[in-house]
Image 1 (cartoon, protein in one colour):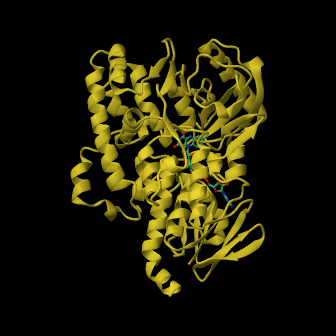
Image 2 (spheres, rainbow, N blue to C red):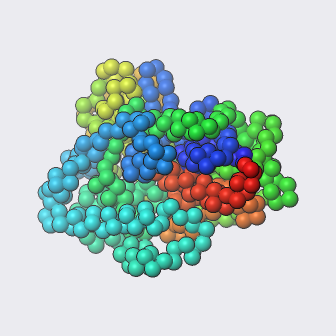
Image 3 (tube, rainbow, N blue to C red):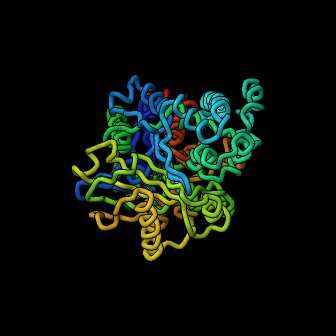
Length: 495
Ligand SMILES: Cc1cc2nc3c(=O)[nH]c(=O)nc-3n(C[C@H](O)[C@H](O)[C@H](O)COP(=O)(O)OP(=O)(O)OC[C@H]3O[C@@H](n4cnc5c(N)ncnc54)[C@H](O)[C@@H]3O)c2cc1C
């Protein structure tokens, strides 16, 4: 059976390998000349920037993906646990290097808020329970119907999963010190919603952060893409790069194939890992799964304003990952989720991968990515980008005590308009759909098309959600569903 996969992000790559392993002839169509989607790499002047993801969390998910093929991540890339995990700059307080060693981390908490050591221990115990139940019982589900979640195990667990409590109230009732709450709430920002709108189920991310740890694949996150492309190629997947898919052809409620760069290609199945809304409203033409008002009503995760800069000297006071929480998050968060406007004093994130990896910058220089989360759909002009660059660079110079501006030898900015142009991202979103309660599990856009039985969707806008590990899971869930659904047809076809 011939399957076409649109896009080469993590979800598409995962889907491609699982299908190929199960006898499908798989072809990936990617509009860019390089695979990886939002995890593409930018190489300029001796600097090698990961354009998107930089935090390698939940190593168990990557490992279990490769294990499906009797491989290990070690067969493809080398992982290093970062220690300390990351640095947090605060307002009116010295920075804190969040320890990768649990006992030290408990002591760090205790020194900031007496009594918080025991509270953190119980938070992480609960988070571990949520993580284990979540990984076993929730995230690998097709999420087609509510009934998938009715099992005695899930019902028994549901009381302990804190589905109806928010992350904000969960931590607010346990800790007083704002700095600790900021550290604990930060992983939730990966999920694209405010802590008050995110179910406390997702405190499982604190287990991922503090217990499973922050890792780095030597050479950068793009090594993971390379690994997945190598695996897929070994399994026989064909990659067609620089192929922009323009339409999924449908006749009599059945997809017959797709049109890429003006040419028609016939396929038995089409799976899209391109942004769901683009596939649904553009590529499927008048066969959309959802109406435009449905999409309008979804809560999108933020977009972001990014700067990739090459600095001609070493910067002392940065670690690999740095969170600049030197302003208040509430006003910034409101501009992202409520007023949908540009922030006055945004918090931001600084990645400095050259602190760990000498291959990503020339000797004696730093590779820096600056990231400001912003609302999707905002007007995006060069003046605005320049304004925020000056603003956060001034702050970074103060936070690090280093002159940086005069030492920049490479700079590229990237924002909402680029996400739209490069990824066909709805309103220029960076991270897909927010994981609010109303958009969790079976309440997300579905992996199947309601009417066209041989069209499927994968990626960060469908189940289980945004982030690299969820994208890996999404691709596997869709492939497994297809294999289950089309199994008898495939057997007949190969006789
Ligand atoms: C700046 C940034 C930082 C992030 N940081 C992290 C992090 O640290 N850790 C983490 O876990 N996650 C992070 N994420 C989220 C993570 O990168 C994404 O959730 C994940 O990579 C999405 O994968 P995907 O498979 O859904 O698709 P995508 O990566 O979006 O890939 C979709 C692909 O489809 C292609 N495509 C679109 N339209 C067409 C078309 N018409 N024809 C052909 N091809 C098409 C695109 O070119 C793209 O290659 C970050 C994201 C961004 C943007």
